[in-house]
Length: 488
Image 1: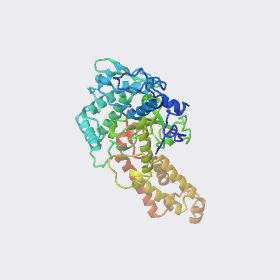
Image 2: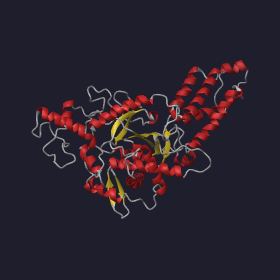
Image 3: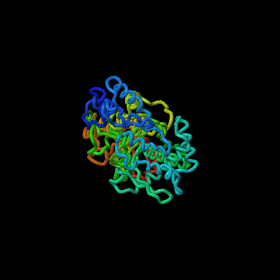
Image 4: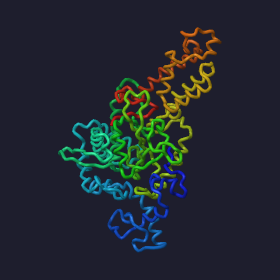
């Protein structure tokens, strides 16, 4: 579920995040006036009427000026994230539309699109098999991206990720330096094109993992996620900082991985939930024909092998973008906000039936792991409660922990049972006349419940194998649910 940053909308302003993240307290009239065409607009410019000016600055007044502003609002859908050729790069367009600095996104930045779109000689993820798998996936969902565009996105994205990984901590928010095959350095700032490129490079990594999975008879879940999340180690928050520095990155609230958000994360002013980030792609050129990237830096799970910071990403049909503001999307943003509300409501309904595509969601209490993990654990907890091993409050706490922390919490509780670490209540000991020590829960529960505990514990290993944890153990990422684990 996702809730927009400013859902109060004391008019249109709060509900759809008008004015960005609520830190600019200008009136609705000032917001509208900011979109009035000015005399500086060139007739041949694709951004005609988008320069920031003062209402009436072009000689128009009254109703004519008002209609011009409304027309501009409707036209913004094709101006934010418009697809351009390398000679008319979307990074430059995006910077101009956003009204923000074009440092690092100047006409010279067009060079990097061409210079870096040739696959690296030692590319780990770009070969004919991967491209074929990516295009099969793209055609299945009706993606508008061509095979050539996919190849270029992946090639650029792989180089970007290499540079982000090797950059100094704290530096990627100001852009990165990427060297091409001719030894030329390109200073690149985050933008819509780089977001698409990184997204496709990660999807290529997922495709390569599917292709290289061991042929050991295990029915593995695919990694080319259609619905769900991706989690990666992000030491120093380098990838997060780079993505977040895009001119069109905006704050949004979300329930995904809330329990692992940094303690100092900015909070939603109304709901108090941690703010995460979003980037919209109004042309739907992200993997899976998706039009929005939800992302945030998160803390590792308590049982993760590595304590380095992590990042989660989720491709969505649409987020809750700004309507006005420096990078507002106008009518297109309003449509996305409304569609997101409908999608959120629909997502609350049960999805026990089969779903199309690759479902890799981080939950255990619904979707893919509900029947195989959540329900059996729920039955075990209910059995322990019925046999007097768990109190009502302890049973409630066990289920809340499983819902919040997922597989890691369930595995820990199962191991505590099997290892005799769960204490037997005094009343049960007295009733069964057990000695003060030497007895474990597994010795006194019913045979049926004991079998359930052993069976689910054994199956957890099988689930991890099917989710690819044997291949990604070195990543050091703790597992919450069925989310995909990749590497930067």
